[in-house]
Image (cartoon, rainbow, N blue to C red; front, side):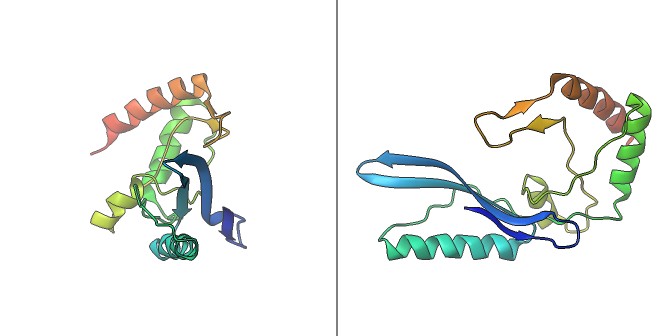
Length: 154
């Protein structure tokens, strides 16, 4: 559980595992984890570690959702275009963050590896915790700017 690897250049998490729930059902203890990584090999490595621990204790591993990772593209034209439009529409600076979150973007890149892909959204705090929340004005701002952006894509 926790952060496994950090990029030493920009201090961004590369891979992590979040123990989200512990359940007791039918005299069995279940641990629900969310594995996030930028590379598929890092996801597989973490699954193998958890599987080994389960084997040691006569347990098993079930996989429900396996988000493939994807790496930040510093040369993304799509991100550049989105940033310019967002800042023009809202007259605010947009914050670019790099994250190991798998999201659906990884699935898209598995099917079409040459896609220029970004992940965008409103401001959130306390992600994956009981105090998770979204900033309502940022949701409205995001929605309005995103509509304009989609209308301009060829």
